[in-house]
Length: 263
Image 1 (cartoon, rainbow, N blue to C red):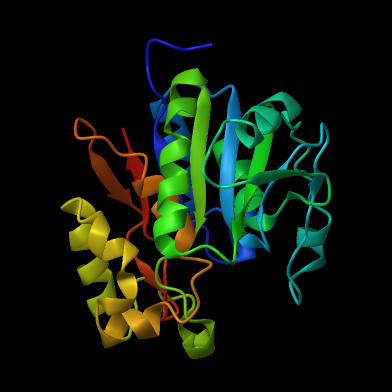
Image 2: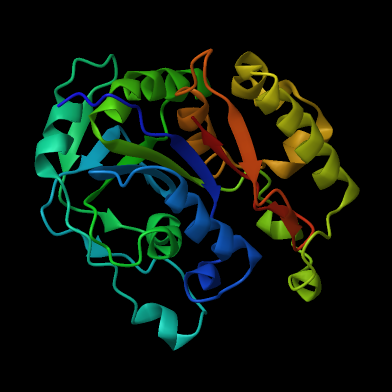
């Protein structure tokens, strides 16, 4: 069913799994942003934490809550996000005639890239959630193009949500500075400025070809999985829409919580 309006598209820097149980400046923004647009009928999430060979999409009615992390407080492992799935939507996406073949899956669920943010945005878990995987065989351009194929869903009550972290180098995290919001290594701050300027100028070509944006960006994105969900969201933008950044700060020196909404 086509609506008279189009829901926004959102990229969130999800950060540490601890954000699922903490009330801080970032989770406050997750809570607030969901109050600025109509309630979705379904959420389609592309998370950094589901990588597959070939693109897959959750098709189960009752997706499980996946605790895909180690070494955190026991409280985190007891959390459930009992949102329903939407098998009909999953089937429509899989059969929608996209250039990329999409396979229905009942082997995944809702991982922490999704639920650690959604439990702040929609704590009642009363909106169906469908996750789509990141195909490790696809190029950044192909991920972006697949994102384009999803645009029409926004006029059908579907919120497109990408979850990752634009600056994400865990090997270089200053663990003793994790509590100091805003601290960043020089290269991380330089990368943030380079990428943000291109986001705001709609320079998607450069952002797709991010590996040629210089040494600071290369250091900030040593592996692609936390960056690629951003491309799915940038692909949603049309010329009449605006980008608004939020949570645009660093944590731990080498991670950014930068998030954005397109509407």
